[in-house]
Length: 537
Image 1 (spheres, helix red, strand yellow):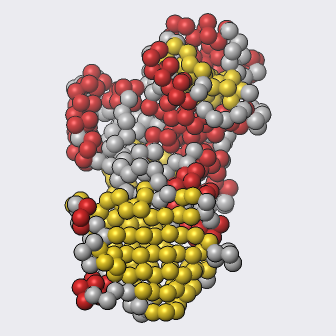
Image 2 (spheres, rainbow, N blue to C red; image 1 turned 90 degrees about the vertical axis):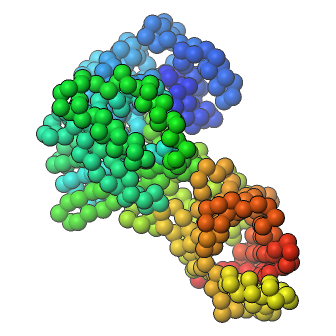
Image 3 (cartoon, one colour; image 1 turned 45 degrees about the vertical axis):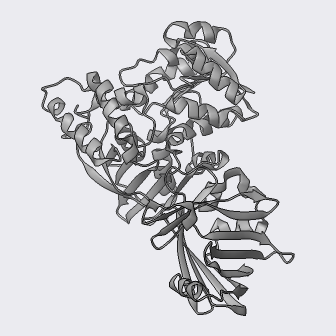
């Protein structure tokens, strides 16, 4: 087992990294941070070792114990930080990774190359969103023969994302300052709008990230715009305005304002969402191409931790032969990073294209997580989304009441029929699915998606202005849809207004996808019940 020490393991990103690594049989994990109470609580929760450690004073002693093979440094901020941790690792023959995205820190790590080679250790900086993930996207495009002269990207977290002290200080310490080697650009200047499928348009501002220098040196990319943004315009544009005195040389830094600005941002958290993302645009002689990522359900803060998790797993498997000090470019493929999202059952989807039609994993895989494997084989094939057109036969039982017939007609519910052809088409866009059902000459159209601040295993299905929260328990190949909430035009409705829904998905003895759906109202009774089977067309 690779004995792994995570420094800053109780923080926003360090804690998530520990959760990603905790159950790997090849990794013997130790969580380290200064707060003993937090360390012990997380170590107990994850079933791993904990170490209360002030790395600025006690790191040498901890590494001298020869208890560790690799250290992952997540104790930021890295802006202005020296290489003391990496140098200590080199002295004690311990591999080193960090999650820094600071240009100066990441691009300067190669000054330790000779010492790291002499010690026979691997030293890597930037095993995070920037530059590991962005670099992996660019490399995949280049490997597919796409010429790239210009890159622009925006990292746009949801407003619900936790804001640790280190992150806030990192943002404010650089805001307004000029970016080296990028004439006319300042940190939190050069405003742009990025349209991320599934999120809409969001602001981004230029940041002092490693990609412009690394992409130019390694891939010959002439120009790179590296940006990040805040979901709420009032926060994003407010910070842009606050940074103006720094741009003009009136103030040295906004860092002293970290506490009051964090307080204001926390008060506004409820006005944002738990959805974040990333968009990367690649341009060259052959045209342009885009890649996007959408993280829902509050899983966005896992994204920066996944490259480090993928890289330490490769180390544990003996698949990293490099020794010396280097930025995290060319060490991970995009597939290896995306595999971390699937492994951890995160509600993160990604893909190429403008509309998000290619986003994977599928909606139900992200919603159900580990429970997805308990679905029937036919159900998994249908919900994987690779086959978008299905057809079969079904029986429809209607209602005898006039009010029920009127409502059924209004919602496009099918009329009673003993044996009818049913067709179902699926559309995917921005992490959402559109279901179009045709039976008995009528069409039912709905949209399914994860929804804001919904727990794992829930989905939202919307029919026009009506939205239904559905819990999806799975057992022995049987998936149920259990109603747990309802809204009209976004307004929650009391329980007595809810329809009665009984919906089950199974597989028959012939391996076909079977469905049995009944919809009714408490004061009217059954509106419709339709049941039958589907096969891919």
